[in-house]
Length: 540
Image (cartoon, rainbow, N blue to C red; front, side):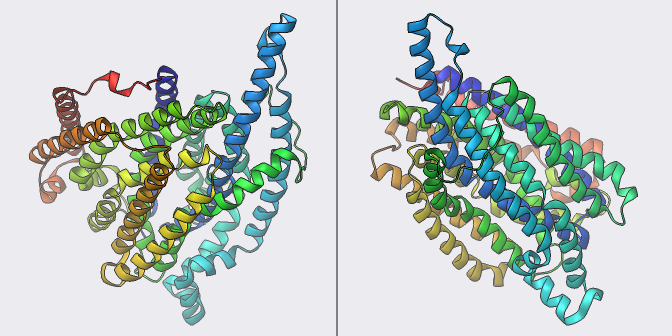
């Protein structure tokens, strides 16, 4: 089990790394084109709304309800295949996946109808979504018309949202296909797919901007086309795995009914973070121009280690935990959760320490050109500092939540999510008036930390998982090594003004040295403290 998990984790992480690197390239191109002005705020808003619904209908609540049920059906098919292979002397691979195929057909048809209706409504009612989540712009539009900055953002965001909303339809089926392939142990395809979205957006930004009235429209069409290509890319792999089936509406079938019961509470549980982000967007629409963009760029840098390690490990852990639960193996279930915690700590602590010390140089090297100014670097770095303080909390949520969903318990995370959302609202109201957009980032971090703690406490109370003494010592060693690394990198780095005076080549060279020496110092101290590969074995 340990080798299989590590192999799957490496595959997902490598593919995710490709996606995140191209995602950073995409953001570099966007920053150069639009900086943090009116067009950037409007595009990031129009991109955020369909991504919010994506978390509900795609990777988020749907996946957490669908994967455990699909794993159960797939396990039944595997057991039937082994039984038939044994009695009829035929290879188990030749036995059709009857239950699995039937469930995929029913779910894809039912999901398809719902997502199609939501997508059409989103396109037709795009101004309504801007009113709901960009209230500051709408108020400005009502009072001053399109001549105002807020009024211009309101009309532009409404127009862009009509183009970006169909992305929801494409990505929902892309996520469905990815969940199927992941459950069958084929992680590489789904992990690679986001690379295509980034490539398309980059190409549209570079070559499509000349054919649109402003660059934001080229980027919006990039989102649309990227979603379409992601969807089409998955189909041959489903066909090869013998699970490309004809969708059919089946609201009352046993499998769909079971998923519905799981997904209703999971919808809220997963959407808590997204609702918090939308509330942040709503409040930010009342703040100075650039607030949404500064939060976006900071969040994108946070997403790099979070996606690479946190989401990557969670992608592997959920199907494994679901199968272990169906086999009634609580000991292995706990060991797998412990493995996930150890791995994200191994990479999460140095990522946190390194980004804290090198935040401004990294932002400078990646984005500071074109419309992205020195002032923008400082503003983005302030938001990034706030987000980084909760990096490990965000990662813990990704690993701990599957501990509930794999056992088909979606109610507990919902209760925790409600408390986290209320906490975030309270923190927003307390901090935003004093710290502006940085207060919003701090509030998100604080609520995520509470969310992670409550998830862990729930698993511990149900005797599903708790940190052993050896794991606590292991984590402490990693924290010590990360602290040493931060001191080493801080000594190597220079003041902000010195970085500004460097050429881009000097900046990149200096950054490479700092990161390389930092990584070597971290793993050297980790080794001195006695951490070995054997610590990551999932013990039977």
